[in-house]
Image (cartoon, rainbow, N blue to C red; front, side, top):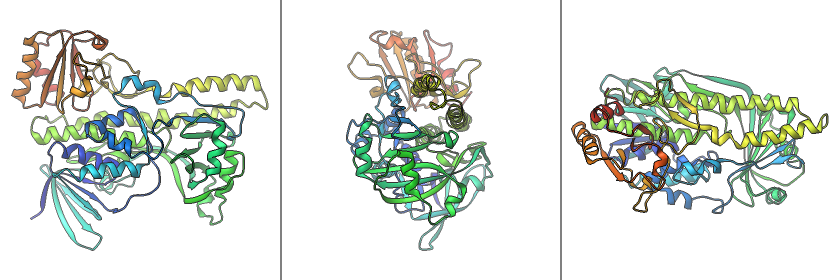
Length: 528
């Protein structure tokens, strides 16, 4: 007889680990299948946003994550942009994600992905409802309208078939799960080979002291058509990684001069000890859908792009949080037929715009900037444009505000759509992330939110709250009401009633009782 689970997750990187943890902490019986037994020691996925740290807070491991960082506590996470090389007189250290800190409950963080995975694995080992199968590979799957069956084999040749209510492929850009259910991917292929070097160099660390302390150093070379060269710190004083566009034939040459590319970008010679050298192709890709029947995809299996701007891992973990509570609702019986499909409906448009508008279009815009302005030809025009570019770069974090206004399980505006574009506000808006605010008991609202749906009720009569409580009980929805005064910052929400779903996105707002509390909750869980 096949071993039965509620959810099978293929891929044990941070997205698969995060999804397993999100489900396991809710008591969902899961199996996590990962062919690797050891981490990749390449320091990718380092920049974790404030939103991502909120996930770790709700998973109960935010302190462990911060303790695992390699760089000193408080070391700046932002970046330096330099023209032509790191010796240039033209550079700026623009504002970054600190500009949106007010709108989140946690600070952002920086650490290598393998450190993040260690924290997730350690926590997952304490969750009894999750079975971990490291060293196992997934192969053939089949599904019907009730379950999914998956063949797996371990590294010693042992074979097994498992069965689950749902299967989620978190198995990377070359996902076998995505391929088996026939999901296609499209996007922008830049036909550009990139090099990656991981190295140690105390000498480079010393030379970078000409700049303010930062974690990333980006070089804008006019010869590279807007493609980035960038150095990132792994620690402070020694470890770095470096990405750069290179000629297509570089990947076939055994004598390729990695050191020469590094020194051209820095503008000076320095000693480096290499730990890893490799190549990758620059492309942005997004799946045309994230679900086929009972099979779903998340993370790089659903969307992939170059490591520009720290969007990849953060988007993948947001997938996990979005999908986790919806699978919980479906399996627990309080989620309606529209709840799980709303995952693809919400997340796919966000990443499509992220890839097109925040990555591909930025490469194109920077190529145009470098082809238009040159200080050797017109210094005054270049300096004015360079100053304006610093301002625009600093606004990037503020413009990136993923929201689900067009979702079928959100009471968004009539013309709302799910988008990566938006504006951060204190106002509670359906489809948008809830901003933190203090309560009169001295705690933050985020510290009082429940794992299910939370109704914020400010100076609202007991009858209105009781109607929601009764409706939630009737529908079996996990629910909590937080009562408080409409003062001391809470009035910044501009609504006395705010319904918040399990991933801290606002579902519905009002200043008076709805005609039917049950109708509000039914739509929020995909039953309308």
